[in-house]
Length: 367
Image 1 (cartoon, rainbow, N blue to C red):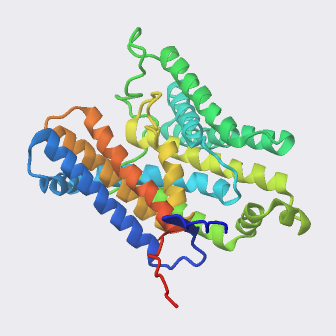
Image 2: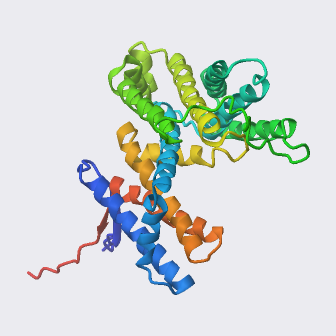
Image 3: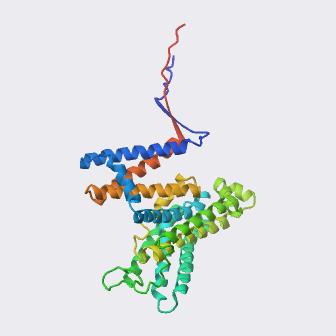
C-alpha cells in the first residue's frame, strides 16, 4: 500500500479578496517592528535607552519650524518623482529612470542660469528654465519609449542605463562650469544677483515647492481617474491584446505616457535647482528616483496615498540620521537603520498579497 504524502508544515496561498483594513494594519505593524529592531540595535551599539529612539525620530522632523519645512520639502520632492513614475507603472512600463530624467532637468535649469544671466532679465530666465527642464526631462523619457514602441526593447534596463548617462553628463558640465576653477564643482549659481532663483513665498523658502507639488498631485489624480488617457493606461496595463482589440494605439500611449513622466521629473529638477539648492551636482536628486518606485507601488498608484507614504519615509529616514548623530555613530549606522526600516516595509507587502497557512494537527479517528 502506497504511503500517503504528508502535507507540508507551511503552505502559502495567494489572497483572493484582500480586506481594506489589511494593508494599513500590516504596514503599521511592519513599521513598529522595524522601530523595535532599530531600538534594540541602537541599545546594543550605544547602551542608551531605546525609548530615546522615538524621540530622536520625531525631533529630526518636528524639532523646530526649520526642520518641519525641510521635511515637507523632502517629502514634496519624493512625492513629485513618485507621481512622475506612476502613469508608466499603471500601464506596466517599468520606468526606473526618474533619477536620470530629473538630473537632466536640473542640468537644463542650471544651463539657463549660467548661460543666460547676462542676456535676459530674471523673469525670462525663470521661464526659460521651466521650459528647458520640462523639455529635457520629456526627451529623456521619450528615448526609451520610442525604442520600446519600435523595437520592443527592455524598458527596465534601458531607463536604468539612461540614469548613468545623465549622471556623467552632469559630471562633465560640473567641470566645464566649475567655480572656482580647479574645484570640480559649480558652487552656488548667481549667488550675488540671485538670477534664476525662484521667489520666496510667505517668508518660507520651501513653500513654493510644496504648493507646486500639491497641484501636480491633484492634477495627476484627475488625469489617472477621470481622463480618457488615464483609462487607456489602465487598459494597456491590464492587457495589451485587449487594448489593441478595442482600438487603443498602444505605441502612442507608451510614448505619450513617458513624455508625461519625463516632464514631471523635469519640473522636479527645476524646483531643485531654482528653489532649493541653486547649484548642480551629480548627487542632487539623492536617490529619490529609486525610492519613488517603492512609494508608487506601496500606494497602489494612488496619488493621495503617496502623500502619506512619502512623508512617512522621509520622517523615518531623517530620524535614522538623527539617531546616528545623536548617539555619536557614523553615517553608515544611519544607512543601516534606514535599510532595516525599508526592508520591513517592503517585506510587509508579501503578507498583504499572500496568506501563510500552517498544517493542522492530524486527528486520528478510530472505528
